[in-house]
Structure formats: C-alpha cells, structure tokens
Length: 147
Image 1 (cartoon, rainbow, N blue to C red):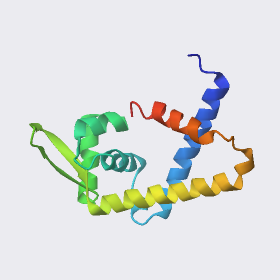
Image 2 (cartoon, helix red, strand yellow):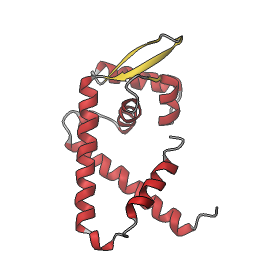
Image 3 (cartoon, rainbow, N blue to C red):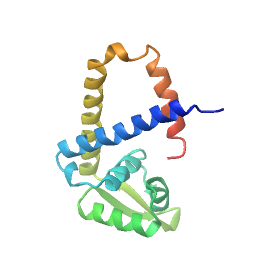
Image 4 (cartoon, rainbow, N blue to C red):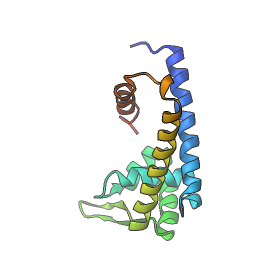
C-alpha cells in the first residue's frame, strides 16, 4: 500500500502533538513532573503487563541499549516507581513491575492526557470526521504493532 505524503504529514502532526500533550500531562501530575520522557515510556511499557516485563524488551521498546535501560530502571527503582526481580523462568533475565506509586503516576498522567484531548476534541467537534473512532483505532493498532 502506498501512503500519501499528506497522510504521513498528518500523522507526523498527530505524533508531535501527542508528545506535547503528554509532556503537559506529565508536568501537571504529582511526581510525574520528576520523570524524564524515557522514564515515562518505561512506565507505559511496564504498566501494560502486570506480570512483569524483561529489561531487554523495555530497552527495545524505548529505543535504548540494555545497559542504558538498566540504568534508567535502577533510577526508577530508587524513586519507588518500579521493582525488579530475577525471572524464575530464566534466572539470567530481570523482570520489571510497577509499584503502586508507579501505577498511580501512570494512571494520573493517562487520565490527564485523555482529559486534555477530550477538551480539544469537544472544542473542535465540527471539524472532526464522523468515522474518526474507527480510523484512529486502526491507526493505533498499526503504530503500536512493534512498539
């Protein structure tokens, strides 16, 4: 499938705006203002799987080397956002899980971000297509397939 330049430009605007909206939500949330964007991404990735996520997968999904991801996770562990433990199925691997504090921060930022987006959508409702939901769900699935 050929993707039109205008489609890529529009998606780029959405991605850039999403980062901006997430940054605002991070700044407004208690304790979240202390997080760097890579740390936020770790909270997002780890929060998707309560059973734990291996450091190697976190590194891949945040675009960092394993040593960089390990340092990032160590700082987050010291801040009380995540816990780490050896994977019982592979003692060489480390699993990372959110703490209650990390889960609260993640949830707070996501809620704030959704409120910001909902407010923007309400104020521009007349400009949005009727099939926006279906299109956004499809785009979300494609963009999150490998991240």
